[in-house]
Amino acid sequence: MVKFTGLNHLALATNDMDATIHFWRDLLGLRLVAGLGRPGFRQYFFELSATDLIAFFEWPDVEKIPEKDHGAPVAGPFAFDHLSLGLAEEDDLWRIKDRLEAAGFWVSEVIDHGFIHSLYAFDPNNIPIEFSTDQPGCDPRDHPKMADRRPTPGGLEGSAPIPGRWPEPERSTPQEDKLVYPGEGADFDWTGKA
Image 1: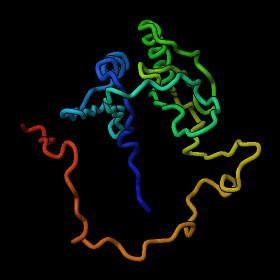
Image 2: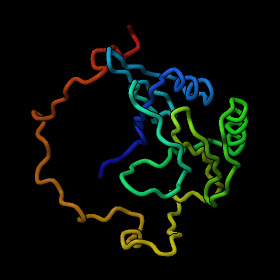
Image 3: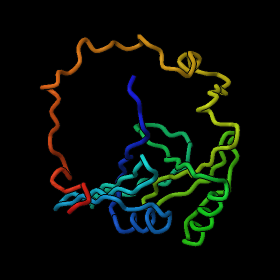
């Protein structure tokens, strides 16, 4: 089975990279760790944790998404509801709340969801953000629970992956076919020596 290390990066979009930088770097405190760009293309990456990044493409003609309450159902094509960022301690919720309010951003009250405490806000692109702290002894990663009163059949099958549900590859990719092609940023020295 493949072992995941986290969310390498979540790629979002903005039409104003500077406003995005000022919010994510200067207000929330995430380091701006990479910037790719050329005429007609720009993508910047912010460090969320030791293994997780948030990235933004800057597209001049993209429009802010309409503001929608976190978790409110919608109809029609839709793929993304909100981003929840984990915080190390409960007091961090209050620090984020104070900083957002001081900067003039709307922010909810702290909400108790049982296994997490959360507050909600929006970035300058109207991207809905939840800030969450795990509650002691209530980590579903340690003790998975199905609290849905009408779970789907798949949900009733348990938390562990079920072998045999999908076909296994008939063969592994041969070493000589494991080719990696250049993409954006491939020509930049990422070693830090230049």
